[in-house]
Image (cartoon, rainbow, N blue to C red):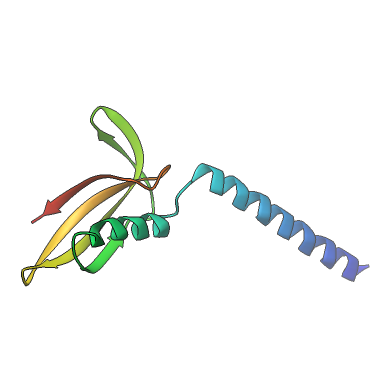
Length: 104
């Protein structure tokens, strides 16, 4: 009997885990890692990147009167022998860079 219960419990655990992952994927369209990768690809078009970071939790951002749910991140680029830092916001739904600003 205990083997049957163990198999049943394992099967139930797998099913619940699968359903939970499907629900999370629908809520959160783009993962932070994928958002950072897409942002880095965008910045690499204008030169090499020496570092990057991203906050794992999305936040609400207003841009041009519209509210976005976005990840906040940053990249460091070496331009003319000098490191320049940029902060950006990536839309959770589409993965598009909403805004970027050079920081001091």
